[in-house]
Image (tube, rainbow over all chains, first blue to last red; front, side, top):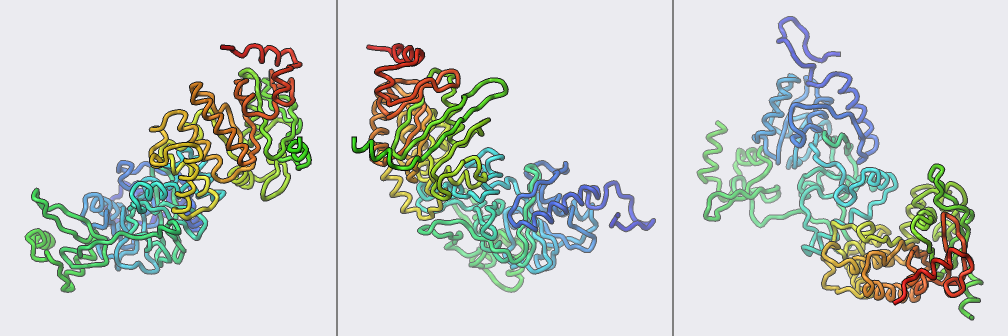
Length: 306
Length: 265
């Protein structure tokens, strides 16, 4: 079953459609179905060699390869940005091996592969968000034994995860952990949301899109189906809070977006900008302007874009 | 005498019947039976390789015995064979009703998190989700085991061996267990630290009316801590009785050797 066009004019293809062979994709799809059927459960799968190093998104690439078709519109972001090396390479990879249209527009994309962020724009039914996951096991740093963590998931023994929150409060006076903030899925499975900032954790809850998580090195796939309840862990006297900034985005003036701090020179000048580059560009195009909208760096960036 | 009569009237907390463990053809322990009541401290003594730890592991649910049964008065299910419980039920029972003090504190503590978090962990395992309350309970327990409460956030590795053992004791008592297993709790400590820890343990056990099974090869520890003794040799229990009776008037030749070989100053 080859989805690629097979007319005589088509260029000769050296790889199977979407890089992986059909049996592998079937195997991954079965793991995805299992993961969707048990939200938050880490389904094992036979992770394959991918032409990027572990830690660069081998899990996400395999998930995308298994679900992508020629009609899909593919977007790939890294830390929210469409234009970083990793995102550009992976986007080109799928444009080449899967003949898909690519986009930077969150609304147009049907598959969004991401590392470290969930786009600011809310996702819609029919979209699939693919996360690259370095360490799927939230309990790993507290309990190194895989046999033990599996039993803990099976028997819902999640008291240990609170030890990490306790440590945070005793050391910093608040839950200082900012990324990979553990969540409970449908009050059953403890799940690592991958290293997204906890700012994005509320977006996991009751999301309309399908969220798939792939860990290539650790050989695990897990998922949050649409409209699933996802709760970030906390204590009664230390409720869950997301990051906040006193600044707004220096370029688009957004006050509700996740901001990156960028050091500008050796004299301590800095700016806060949206990490979601597409959302920021769209806001600027719509006429929003931040305090540094006319800064030479911003102008230079616009020059690059044209 | 009144206390003893009261003890006999209460129902047994733990009933061990004919427990045997073979590792292939190697004998771990054979046909061990005894009962324990709440508040009782049972010492298991014997030379190394006599089956003490095997017996302890069998009773504490870590090692399925080859034969025999271990029944415990659980909070949830009443008197029941612990190996007949499903694994999640058994694990929950172990968390709720038991404590286990290891010889090496590194086996019983999480070395990557602070001493305070180690002490509070059993509360979190039982569903406590209020930081302030857990913090206060932890501080109270550090005081009870005579540790400096200002060091609550230090890692276990930054404490001395004796202090680590105190943290381990606090961690295993904070959730109010019914029965605590201790495997050579003072094994790796120097004599003065050992004496203070034993003193502390004795006080806590008496105050909390804990039932304790303490495995030791040290007759002095047995004398100080235990109400009753089980003397093991080659996997068999060769002598049982009240501690003073066994140590002052040993009947079995092996017990006689054991008692007479204690070093005198």
